[in-house]
Length: 343
Image (cartoon, rainbow, N blue to C red):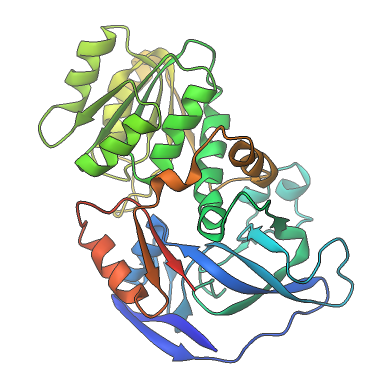
C-alpha cells in the first residue's frame, strides 16, 4: 500500500509499505482523510519536536477519519463499513495518571505520527477499537479528521473554565485557535478578541464568532485589545500561536487574578515570560497537553449544528500531493488555514 513517510527534515516520499492486519482488539481502517497539524509541521521542518527525534522513516498524520475495513479478534460493537473518527493517543491505561482520568498526561503514551508510532498518511492503519468513534452521516471524512483539532481546543477551553460574560483573548488563530474562538463564545464569553498575522485566518475568526480581530503585523496586539477592553484586561487569554512573544502578550492582557492557557508549541522549546508582571497579577497559567475524553462531545457539537467544523478547511490535497501541502504550510502561504489530505 501507499504511504507518505518522513525521511529527514523537509523530506517526504511516497513509499510502498506492507498493509497492516488488525490484532486482537483492533480494527483495520481504510483512511479517507488526514488533517495536517502544526505538530506535523514541526516534525516535517526539523524531524523532531523538543527531544523527540524521528530517526527512522516515519508516517506522519494524527488527525484522521476513515471506514472500518476489518474487525480484529474480540472486537464487538463496531461494524465493517462504518465511518469513524479516531483518537490518536495510546495511553497505557493503568498508570496513576490514566487511572486518575488524565490519559493525556500518561508518561508512557504513544501517539499516532510521533516516533516510534506511524501515523495516518497511509492507505490503511490498524488501531484499537476502543479509540474509534462512529460518525453520523452528516459528518464527512474531512470534517471527521478535523474533530481532533477541535478536541484540543475543547480541552483548552475546559482548562480555562470560562464563565458567562467573560472576556477572552485568543492569540493566534490557526485551526486550534479558531475553534477556541467558537467554543469560548459557546461557553458564554461575551467578547472574544482574536489576533494573528494572516488576514485569511482573521476572516475565519470573525465567522467563528470573534467580536474583534487584530492584525498583529499592523498593530500592537496588547495595545489594540487594551483599547477595546480597557485597563482591567480580559478574564482569560489563550496563547495558541506558539510564538516567542505571545506568552508575554497573554500575561499582559489578563486581569489581576486572570488565567492564561498555553496551547501553542514554541519552536525553541521554551516559554518566555517576565516573572514580575505575572507574579504581581497573581495569574494562573495552565498548559494544554493534547486532549482527553472529548470525542463524543465534539461529534455532538457538529451533529447538532453548534460548530461548523468544516469552516477551518481551506485546502484539500491527494495523498500524492501531500509533500506540496506540507511545503505550502511551512512557507506560510497566506491563503491557507487548514489543509486536509483526502484519499
